[in-house]
Length: 253
Length: 253
Picture (cartoon, helix red, strand yellow):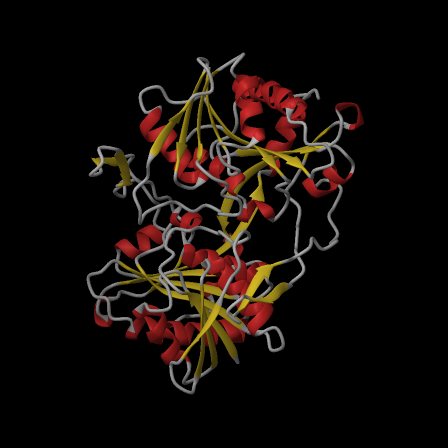
């Protein structure tokens, strides 16, 4: 079975290297990842500059390519160019350093690589390690390898990806696995204002996570209980009932 | 009523200027837009560099700010910093030069500004002019002003934005308004390969739109019939039924 691995922390991150080396013992692994960190890029793609592909050497078992683009670019290039003649059976994005829970999905480069995967018609998984209490990626990589086997055996629904978040705790402190819905996350609305050496103001996004209620079936709640969260994610974009409401507006043109 | 205007073509584009000047006759208008074109950036936000805000002068009736960030950054800064004490009643992103139909929504900077608007809890509209047959933004701006009045009168559902696409034809050639669902768009999978002057290969995304079937209720179909399309868009991310399926997998950890 062939797996394409991508991420948004970039080719030099520990999470992607640990995952690729672990998966290479069971699968044919190709890595295509950004040449530098690309967090919170959302689902950007690169239309206005050309992309370069650079080969890296991680030993004989893994094909590795760095691209000067976004996570979604890397998946497109992986599927449409590098693996065009032998499409991957599965795409895995990660392992991200930091959680991607609830509304984070909208901003996340990690998840956007998996979204591009399902747009390309290939089952996809995004994997994140939550927090930095214990950033050893070996257990998360083991868990991902076993989940990959199950996904390849059972299949996913069309247009569906799995968003996986793993608590950053020792294995024996993890309480179990929950299949969850996507919760809500909001950040407080602060920008830090500073003056640069030339006297101009500049601004840093400085939002902290707000403590808003999330029901027990959500990813946010599962992680707060030290459980691994797996959310099946599908982008349903049309608000069908509101179409009927709007038809009563009698919009003139 | 206060309106915050953003876009992804940047502060110097004709579409945003025409829209802002048209709306200023009826509303209190603030423009916060990227200082350069930011198409296809998706829902990126800027975490790793500071943002600068530069004031522009478009006359006494409009407050205008350029930001060295993404469309989503501009909306965050507009709501959380510039208009923090007098929140906008409505956010409008556009008028974009080029359509944002179907799956394009996932990649679109134009739509992502409206998505950030609803994350901030403010009714939001994304407006795009489809194609370049007739790029006069005056009629699209008139239509947007009238739609804005209706949205302010009737309200939108929570977490719902309107994605509006207007055919690039003369007003008298436009056949009407359709309230639509979000269709499907796919691009063919080609990268153009070239050699740079130093002999290194580089790659341009060069996908053309594929002609895939779209039902009559979709945005893609409405535009093909020279009708204005308005899709109520809401991000429902959880694939609820697949949760039950996955609970049967008995995933070990």
